[in-house]
Amino acid sequence: MAKPDHSIDPRIMESAKKEFLAGGFERASLKAICENAGITTGALYRRYKGKEDLFCAVVADTVSALSEFVAQRSAVSPTSLSDEALIKAWDMDEEDMMQWFSFLYEHRDGFVLLIKCSEGTVYANFQHDWVEKMTMKTYDFFLEAQNRGLTRVSIPMEEMHILLSAFWTTIYEPFIHNYTWEQIEAHSKLVCGLFNWQRVLGFGAQE
Image (tube, rainbow, N blue to C red; front, side, top):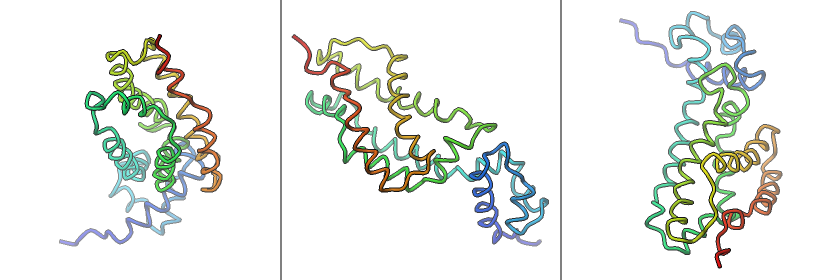
C-alpha cells in the first residue's frame, strides 16, 4: 500500500495562506492555490473537504496558540488576589500591553486571516466572539472587586462587552492596516494612555 505523500502539505498551506491573505476567504480560488502549490485539485481534495476546511487548517495553529495564551494569562483566579493586586490588574501597563502585541505579531498572518479574511467561514464573527470570550473572563475580576467593596460602580456585562470591543478594536486595527513593529510599539503607548480602566470602573472613588 502506497504511503501518502506529505511532502506537498507545506506547499499547500503556504499557497493557501497567501491566497486567503490576498483577497479573503470568499474571493480565494482553490484553482489558484493548487497552481501556486504545484499540485492538482484532486491532491487537495484528498486532504481537505473544501475551501473552508483548508482555511480552518491554515488558522488552526493560531487559534490554538491564542487559546493557550489566554489560558496562561487567566490562570490566576481573581479571588486569590489581594485588593492591591486586583486593582492593579486593571492598570494599563505598557510592558503587559506589549506582551499582547508581541504575541499577536508573532502570529501575525493567522491573526490577520481571522480578523480580516474570514468572512464566509466559521470564524466570520471572530472579532465579536473573541471580545465575548475576553468579557466573560474579565468580568469575573470586576465582580470580585465589587464584592469586596473596592468599587461602587455598576456596569452590566453588556456594557463591559461594549467597552472591551472599543479596547480590542485598537488592538485589531494595527494588524488590519499592516503596521510595522515600530509603528505597533508607538501605537501601544497611545493605547495605554487612552484607556483608564481604574477611573472608569471607579477604583479609589469610594467615599
